[in-house]
Length: 454
Image (cartoon, rainbow, N blue to C red):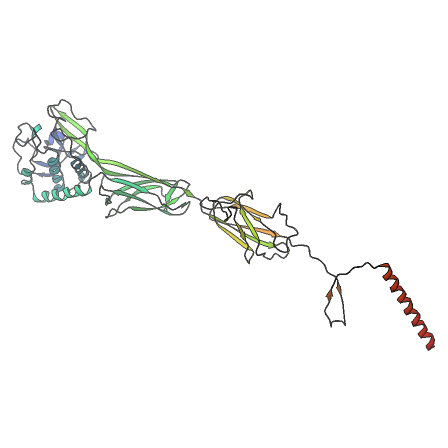
């Protein structure tokens, strides 16, 4: 469907010299009584290098001295408003068939426009001697035009009834959350008055904060033979992706483009029935979510520490971090979420808003690491989470200072285990004297035994 500029409506056909040379169409075998010379012509005229349809028309109202002005609503030859369905039919046909190359379609268009705009109405009748009041005798001319023209008349009339305006142009953004740099599906559609899609309709579009997958930000798409909505694969490039679309549509009513005054008659060239429709849609897009993975290890052995409780917070180590949907990451108690490291000493936090500063704060010391844990300044690891990436953090715990034991050997070498014990190195004075007496007594007995042997 082509955009139209410089179309014309007609009632009683004008002479070729009034507007231009004849274009494409057919001559009827004769003219109706009282018609002017040239009224047998059914088709277009060439005016300012364009194919147009011409109206030889009275002033807007019979006996009025006021002529049409550009942009005026076109009235019937009797000076009355066109019926809404007739106006819509005319607008559609001028938009749809104004660039036809078919002589049959050109003649059929002229015949239909005559029939709708110059029908008998009061002073406008078939017997009028004044061409300003002469009605168009559709039956007369139907009997004198070729059969292919009448076939085109029936087809085009049905086309107008089914596809006339007003049309509705719409653009729709996805309902799901959008991610910058990630493909999403937007739709554009052009609907008729019965809410069915217009087939083969070109729709222009322009994107902001977004591009198509091929990188283009503007272009044109065409609806298919069923008039189904067109799906566009759009990649948001910023936080506020939007689309603006335009399309040509039949106007609600035709308007005058160029009246040509000749005495008390006007030959009128009009824009026909086109108008521009516009529509828009917009959405919000966020950066891709990120994740944090923290590893808890022993500072000396470098081995993983399982079962360590860690609180996920924002940079201030107090308020909760934010999830991708901007909601706070909290537990059932409404406080920042607490997680525990697994058997491998790690824990991962997915679906985080980016960019964002994240901290993981130790809640309590694991067993064997209590000595160096300060509840007022617990160990923490922090970093910035980027779009679509995983932040790797490491949190180290220093083990408690080991207690060194004392050992006492017992039994023969290598035959018994070593026992471990603790003991008191201080002796009471009475006990010390008793031990000394026993030592002296043992020495005297040993000396006596040696003397007797000698």
